[in-house]
Image (cartoon, helix red, strand yellow):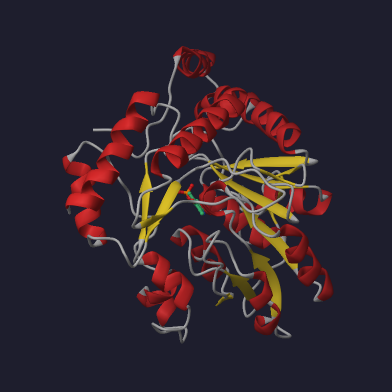
Amino acid sequence: MISIASPIVESEEIKAVNDVLESGMLAQGPKTAQLEEDWAKYCGTKYALAVNSGTAAIHSALYAAGVREGDEVITTPYSFIATINPILMLGARPILVDIYPATFNIDVTKIEAAVTSKTKAIVPVDLYGQPCEWDELRAVADKHNLMIIEDACQAIGADYKGKKAGALGDLGCFSLYATKNIMCGEGGIVTTNSDEQAAAIRSFRQHGMVAPYEYAELGYNYRMSDLHAAIAVEQLKKVDNFTVRRQHVASELNKALNDIKGVQLPSVAPDRSHVYHQYTVVLTDDASVSRDEFVAGLRERGVGAGIYYPKPLHVYPHIAKLGYKVGDFPVAEDLAARVVSLPVHPKVSDEDVITIAKAVKEVLTNG
Ligand SMILES: *Cc1c(COP(=O)(O)O)cnc(C)c1O
């Protein structure tokens, strides 16, 4: 089976973990500090702060942006649940805005209508590894004095007009979960250029501590361990190589699937690079099979397809109860019913690409 995701662990990662184990300093320490320095340099931001998940990163970033109880935060209904849950964790209200059908990213032209006097921030997601419409996002945020928290959890290494994902909003959030483009099992990073925001995140990830045993506010234990940081330091050195390979596989898939009826292939909007966390096709109306049949057919032929995401976020009970219903976000709802992601990670070989393309063709022509 060609799997949909496969973490790459080599001798460097194993040695790095062993070194930390032997050092006796396992919690947040020098490896975490090194990761933060390397990550900030890579993204071109003043700070990178390590935490223990992407969810913790988004929670910490929203907190540092000043989001509090009763505030409204504009985001997308088409993402992983971890984009939206931290908004609720702060007692704020997610205000959802539909997406563009071509890029799966938030439709910036619909944001202004969602702004109220309570709006504090926007959380755009660079979904599947493709940056959003950042010039337009910045313009609408500046006009209404809103903070932008970039959910770049799928977009490490992507850029927009030469600026790296993570440096495009006021704060950027990353995940180092096992299936992400680079990983350490579980982990997260927040990037920012602001001294105040960096200080707020340092405190928030450590019980609200501002000086030894001085707790200024409620905080959490969101610290990253040096065991995890050691893996992430090695992975960050490899990220550009991984990205080149993902882009190569995507371009080979584009060529091989170009003339097949029934699927729309991913597209890249101008002025940006796509790092293909996912290579996601959309089944079109003229497809000869249902999505379930398509996915089952691919699996029978040894291709591990995935569905990201089977439902838009507003249909889950804890979001729906805020007043959302089916029909509110037609683009997101339609795509959630049609998308299929094909394997694109660096371990997918050129031979695998042929297998994937052959399987797609067979299933769509024979049913
Ligand atoms: C992975 C991911 C997150 C964070 O997930 P964690 O599992 O908490 O690291 C957030 N948003 C998006 C879009 C993601 O893909």
